[in-house]
Image (tube, rainbow, N blue to C red; front, side):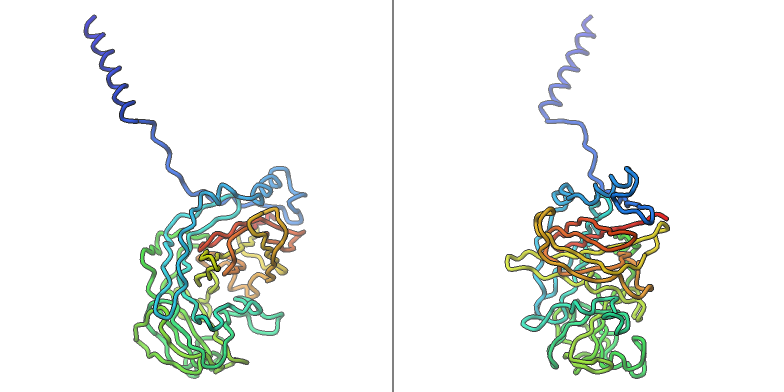
Length: 375
């Protein structure tokens, strides 16, 4: 009888000690969700789709308040000045996904190559992949319109690999297309783990290059090390330029014309008067096999803090008008817009009916919205 009492007493003592120590059942760790892409039969809209598909699209289009609360917005880094490089983003974090959209802690670590008080804004009339209403070649970079002689700065730390012109060596479609140019091969940001990053379009191709074209002056030489914000030349209109501006490119994996990527997915967005940094919105439009689709008439409507509120601003663009630029790694996007104020957006475009989704842009991060259509 006594051994049984002793065993009971031992069990009671163990339970008491566990309770006193605050022991509890282990919790399951939080995991990033896999995007659940909404599929619509070609010719269907969300209203015409089957109940299951319509319900999925409705859930994807509803305000993702749990996503917003789960994604802790980092303290916005300061935009680089000529003496200070942009704070590198921690880009090896898992994405936060809900329905057909994901928010990525992004590699938005490149400083604008033009600094205020000069114009440091990307020209919205000739975005990456666009043709200005079929009047120009598909754009492999972005333009920053500035007066002749405006200082051009390195967008990040790295080594100069080209400092000259393209009369002999071709860096674009034709000889003497970019005129005087500089190309920098960049160091990866501190804490970046390219092999471990999770991107919708595949692993990050390295190295990373930036190209600065149409310069009137070049103030660096090949092999020279430079830091973000260091002057490398001056704005001009050499080569095929029709006016004074800086043509700026980001190239991944190799220093070639076809390795170009949208700079708006790499440039650090500006901060507003309260210090809150902007974000980036990208769209993937796919067929049933996951191949990118070209669409026109994309309208991105800014709704502010209220997803049900009125439209406060609109951005108009097309998917990249050169098929070779669609769906490239690492984002696999069909279109993208950077430097957007944080808040809610509605993405609309006509494709077998009018398509639309709600998306939330967070400070210093990239929101990727996916549309996929079944055959």
